[in-house]
Structure formats: C-alpha cells, structure tokens
Length: 355
Ligand SMILES: Nc1ncnc2c1ncn2[C@@H]1O[C@H](COP(=O)(O)OP(=O)(O)OP(=O)(O)O)[C@@H](O)[C@H]1O
Image (cartoon, rainbow, N blue to C red; front, side, top):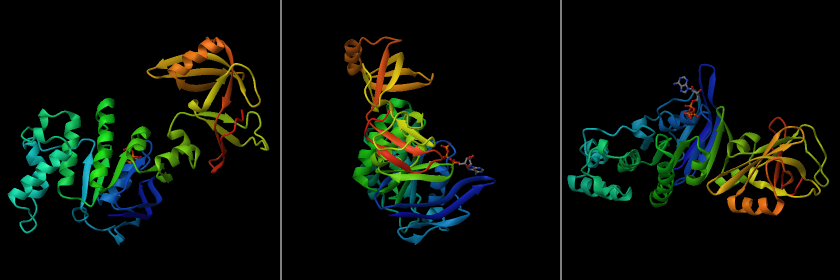
C-alpha cells in the first residue's frame, strides 16, 4: 500500500516537529526517516500510524485520506526499540496473539494459525525456539520475534522506530542485513526510523533526511550521499572537511567569499610535491583502526584537515614519501562539493581538483 503525506504540520507548544511535510512512499518500498535527535522522525511515524493527530495536512493510504482513521483500522504493524513481548507467553503464542484476538468471524482456525506462525518463525529463522519464553532469548532474537509478531496480522504498512537501537553494534549490523533480505521477500511498505546514517544507507530503498521538522532531501542512498541537496545532508551523511572560500581556483571559476567547499576525507590524495591546486600541509597524526588509516594534517592557517585511506595504501605511501609526524605534504582533492553559504543548493559537484 502506498503512503502519501500532504502539507503536514504539527507542533508541540513552540516546537515545530512537522513543518509542511510532503512525501510519497510507493507501495512495497522500504523508506528510512533519517535525522538527528529531535528532528521529527518519530512524530512523522506516529502520525502515519494514527497514534498522533496532525494540526493540519493529510496522510493518504493507497490514495484514500486516512488522516482521521482510527489506528486499529489502518492495518499497520509496529516494531519499536523496546518492544515488550508478553513475558508469560511462549514465542509461538506471542506471534499468534494478533490472530487469536481477532473477532470470531475473521479469526483463522487453530490449524491455520499454527501453519501461519510456523511459516513466520521460519521466515525470521527462529522456528527452533517456538516453545521458549521471551526472557530466554537474546535482544536480537527478541526483535526478530517482534517483527514476526507485527507481520502475523498481515499489515499493509510496517512501521519500525529504531528497532535495533538497543542492540550492540555487531548484532545491529547483522539485523540490518537480515531486515533487508526479509523485506525483499515480503515487500510490505515499510517506514524505518533511524539516526544512524550507515543503517539507513544499508537498509533503505530511499532515505528521507530530516532536520528540525523539515525534509532536507529524499533520494536513494547513492543520490543523497553523492548529490546532497544541502550542507546539512552532506555533513550528516559522513565526515567532511570544510573550507571557506575556494582556497585556490578552479578553472574558469569565480571566487566568492560566501562559498563553502566540502571534501570528504577519502576524497583527498596525499602527494609529495606541490602541483596546481594543491594544499600545503604538515602531518600531525596517523591513526590506523582496522582496515583504514585516518591522517590528520595541519594547514598553514592552523586548521586541521582529515584524510582517510586504506591501511595498505598508507603503508606504501609512508615508505614512498618517507612520511612521519611533522612531515610536509600536499593534498589534492578528487572531488569537491560547493555550496553558497546560507544553505543554497549545490552550485557545483566538482570532480576536478581545486585546492
Ligand atoms: N508529546 C510531545 N509533547 C511535547 N513535545 C514533544 C512530544 N513528542 C515529541 N516532542 C518534541 O518534538 C521534537 C521532535 O521529536 P521526535 O521524537 O519526533 O524527534 P526524533 O527525530 O524522532 O528524535 P529521536 O531520535 O530523539 O527520537 C522533540 O523536540 C521532542 O521533544
């Protein structure tokens, strides 16, 4: 089922949490609402769910106005960060619950419920723990059961609010991939709230980047990462070095003091001699963590620039250039993104070196 959000406004006191939001989610898509704490993600999700009423604007399900439809009639499934399974019920009964409480006319037979719950437990790869109780499961297993329980009633829309937020980093990573595969199997329209950009990029078909109750950009993970519409999106999606002005000149470009240039750490190349459009720096620190090395360079004006490169490449470079803390080097940008200060749209997404 498709979801449309039209001119949606919501405020709590003086806090604007939805500032004239418009959004189209096609049927079967998995969309991530991504943004920092307080940006309005959960409020938007709760309005879509029918748990919160907007001040104005509408939510359409499959083209029909559902803004004032009761939450129970919206056929939405929920998974929250702390989804409390019923402690006194087995896993099997937890998943069966939504079907057992249906009115008699729509309630499936015991045999159908058994078949359905077994299928769902297989889908979330936990059929072997059907007879256990929630306290006998790990956090990751509990969230998979929460998802099976949400899917049992065949929701038209699945809403997930930081479902893996309480889990440790390794389990989170596993569950992200698992959720992606699961969605590829069941194709239910899903909206997923997260403040973790990596999670959004790995899981979602499209990302809605939110900031202060507004939508900054909607696009595929590649679109928002490679072509950020605003400085906020660029900075929220990963580390970036910021330079005021042009710091040199791009061919044919005019210099504007209001311009801000951004270069991601992995888009800077370290070279041993000055060239056109390079920046003179001094190595101040090299930190290798796992497969990558982060280099911190100091510029002549005292500010710092970060460079990131694969560990093996750093080892070769260090030998070739004889680099150590305090060594002089030059940086060349493979790609530069420019914005006019004040958050105007990008004026250039310039692959040419310009520093
Ligand atoms: N029921 C409420 N009453 C008053 N203020 C609220 C209420 N719900 C949310 N807010 C405020 O609205 C703003 C947006 O909250 P919301 O939970 O939608 O943001 P979020 O992006 O989901 O943040 P987080 O990632 O921290 O959950 C916050 O400043 C929050 O304090």
